[in-house]
Length: 116
Image (tube, rainbow, N blue to C red):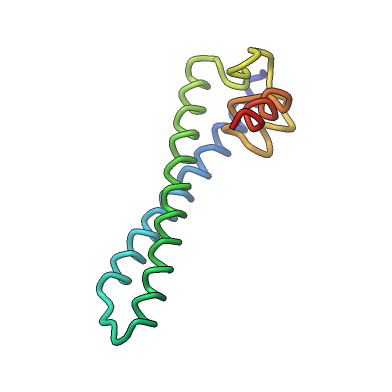
């Protein structure tokens, strides 16, 4: 992969990382606000509980993506970026543009998804 392409992906990954960190901070703030509410009846409790579960799920997904981004940035430094972890072939530039922290090429991703 050319250095200009790597720079493009570093910028893309860094921008997404910053956005996720902002999102996680927002989720944490939202959870704090939900926990400080004075609830009057069972309907309020149910609504807050539902909102709380949704915020936690969003936060967990964001944390996972953040870890994947960190791994991808490490691979760039180690000159291993864009290599499929399963077949060790290059991941297509088109796939990396859609998911710059992809671990697998399209074919291997389908295999992994079927196994899960």
